[in-house]
Image (cartoon, rainbow, N blue to C red; front, side, top):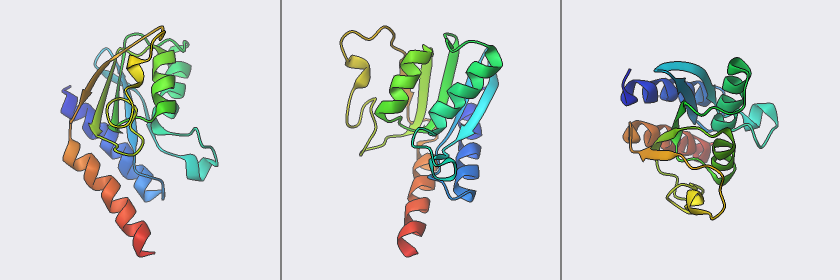
Length: 150
């Protein structure tokens, strides 16, 4: 599958989050060109501030694989990860992170921080951005437009 197809799967997860009243961020974890785990943001419904899509997809994949070290994994996420999620991705030792839209307020890969440039990290991953950017950005904007109307 292509990067766009994997990001489409992450966008599908984000839409599930939107339907559930969550901030619409979705993620999929891919190993050997196959989706191993899928998740969307759930901090509101789970009453858990750590229940971001990236953290949930790592937890599910680690459970399935039987190891928290996901060294041959690529994570596709619709929005640039926050600092907490970048930390989890580093600890999971993923290979690549591909995100859709930048997050100008909390994005920790390029927008507000460059977390991977922190000295002393025991792992770094490759980053790509802009895959299905418009669709990812539109979902987030739709969510917050609706919130402001209520």
